[in-house]
Image (cartoon, rainbow, N blue to C red; front, top):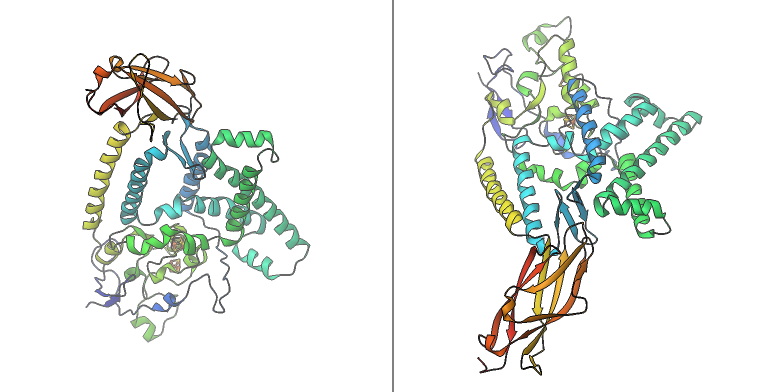
Length: 504
Ligand code: SF4
Ligand code: SF4
């Protein structure tokens, strides 16, 4: 006998295999089960009257939560240490959107490298898509900074001060007495302090740790712009972690919204084994005839998996956009199963396909397609990074609107403008020379050596004087080399030398 079971994501009908959790012969009776899809009509965090349904998530505990604590501790250290890591004098990462300066893995990307930055960004997007197609939203629940800070810092502070979910609910429902004022005061003060810390951290990723230190040393009055930005960041983080919370994942995060198109039936996700768990229900010690004839699945409907969920959903309804794969419900259910002396894993990390068929992971054609695209993009990116960018970028142009001049000694004179960008964090002294010194003489307008600050840019002009017998036509190709103080060529540029008609 087989049963008709609604697919949890699409609502399509599939055939139950009535298999055991291990994919062996059926050890639970096969049943008729029509899923109640009414949960899709509303969001768990919005009440019927349209107001916010505040989520009081029960404090998680268990094997996976302990692992999450370790992962989060490592990530928190990384978040705070990364801005201080330098590669060749450059920060490891910098996202200075204000001045359009970006550094990835210590490699600075200037406006001139925009094509490489776009390629690196697109490669990262394809990687994220591929990762999500295979591993679902494991990033959201385990590694996203929003979740790490919310669940492992702010939520834990809240448990520490206000107690577990029921005590929080009671406190919020009660009057503003001395206890409530004291607890809320302490909690919000600590939240404000941590938000300020995270606001400063965010700033170090934007302006770099050196500029942040300058601001701290000089004081708010000396750097009002940066100080205002820090305070704005701190206020936003306070709002997000004290009030907005899971709404950031459910409503705002574009990655979360994308899951609907990224997830496949083969994607790994936190899922409830409906074949094993249904029909759910509490077992009575004394059953009547009807109850005995309709045996129950393993889910005892204790709702602990719902109570620990930080986004307020019931995972037994199937895959939902709100699930951030935090795995808290797995721990909660495993604890129940252990107490009932049943196998753990009624809720587990698996795929829709594995749940329905009991077979192992099978890559979909989409995985192969994304992998192919990712491999091509990575190859192009590595090639571009190794050959397509210099630490110094020189642009040399013949002065527009100007013809040649004939000098008293008979040589011809053309004027050029230059723009040189130093992409490194070290100051530089550079000279511009003719690649072929026999072609003529280069005379700088101003100092012979160009001084460039770290990540600085210099603009200027120079003349090239050329004998008439060197001309190859009205326009003669001319090449320049930009050299450092050790006569190492750091960049090259080309232009034309304009001569009179018929003088060659
Ligand atoms: S359903 Fe489970 S994994 Fe998903 S958010 Fe809720 S507790 Fe976390
Ligand atoms: S924790 Fe497990 S047994 Fe309890 S309601 Fe959730 S799925 Fe059912």
